[in-house]
Image (cartoon, rainbow, N blue to C red):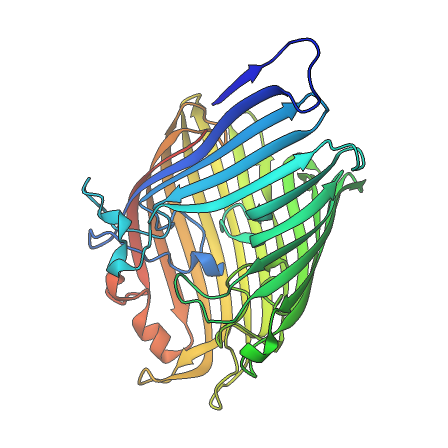
Length: 437
């Protein structure tokens, strides 16, 4: 939705407004999802950890609005105000219309209305090069999201400022680490982002990212916490491996503060003993996209692999049997178009994880080894106004089967957890409503 006013008069002053308009975009997801016992659940079955694919997002009532104010001036200068507001993120509970979501589960402010981005962009100024712009504020800078895992693997999420010209940029983004209100005093981490995008080669285009991270005052950090780091990524975008469609393929490396997939910077990047040590490092690979098979069939796919060492608190106990984590996800989602307003959607995935977050046979956490195989199968009937793969709005009833087997005795005993009766094989049922606008 957009509205715009235009001024057409003679003898304009350089600072007079030529056009001034508002634009509103957004995303809404309403997810009715229950486990096989018929209760709402916040269990995502390891989806954020690349264990499964499927419709396991826990947000029951998520609303997101992106509002921008775009103005141009007589002297060629332009400005943009960007604001992103979100409600319901992280809260799986089903509510009546009493407004109880404002306090969240256990008063943890999950699902509350929040301003996620607020920034200003300026461009067209005579003393800047052509097509150059500057910005400042809070934002998700250069964010990329995988297709079936749904994970944001690249971003700089925080408060900062930057300069960009023709896809090349430099920015400083800073954040106080820690979740929710748990912000350790005196701890701030910074990322200097250097990026160069849209280099055409090999039938596609390449994006290059380099991030140099540093703690503001290392004296406030514990000896086992990272206080600096370097991360880099190369991203390649083209058709679907030579076929009709599109793909994004990326390879990233990071160490220290950048050990979380190299280019994924935010409040999760450091400042607590359970994040990354100075010796922490990871290598990350992902490739995902959508293939247009014929007029009826399309297929989404994703392959993601993560190898991390001494990250996320691994190896910090004397009893630890290891200090690394390996994660692999292979997922496909073929869809069949019945007509313009209905399609069938099928999702299958295999996940593997080898890590050292295990407990002994009596449940005592001792960072023992665990190897887990994850299997997911889902069938969904999609009612939509446009049965393309990304056609929205849609209402999607679905049923999902999830299975796992663990080498660790305690993990195998507990399966998917209490809301699945500690079973390693379970079902979930749901109806998801979704729209982008």
